[in-house]
Image 1: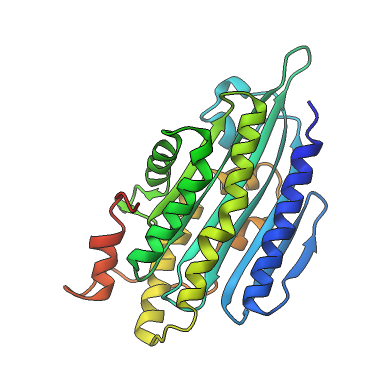
Image 2: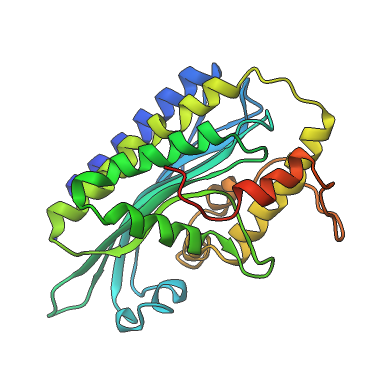
Length: 293
């Protein structure tokens, strides 16, 4: 199976997204090649407090446990995995954190046809909810998927709501977006095109929100709540995220894998927002899954 076109697309996507993020922030990103991929990241930018865009291309003689846990038939196969993954943490609490990932896996065994699939998605994690921002993000997600079937967006939105959920907290991580995995229905060309459409729509979904909120004034109260909610982001990535586990188990670069973690985080014991506050509004009006479109 020729994976060169997939490699070319993912590497190009990384560069295109970084160019837009650099132009928006105003500070150059650091480029860090590590043998099986490239991490392009920013710390202490003018707008982004921390974030980065990773491209990785990893191979191995045996599928990691995080992959075979839900695909046991792939145990013992060689694998090739590549993709782009990004997380951006703005400094301004009125600007949401975002995550996007597009990826492809190929599992092989001598004498058998290769098993391939695509996965990915994007999601939004606000600290202070703004309805028009949520609507724009979800509408753009739908635009990315509409050419591939009338029911695709609804299915992938529901999948996202269910996946980015902290089971130990009984709480969503954010307001969702789209998520898909194990995609191989309809042929290779359709699946690759769908994955490309998700990647190509990311900056259109996210950067307009940053432009709207970049000059919104904030106080230490908002920064404090942002740091508290970032703790939920850390908990999900370290406890539940399959991508984090796969990266670590497949011998990926730890610095690049954990680049997704925010720079300033706080935890409190049994904290609850004040009734009627903007912080409570996030929990009551934004985090519950809903039809933003």
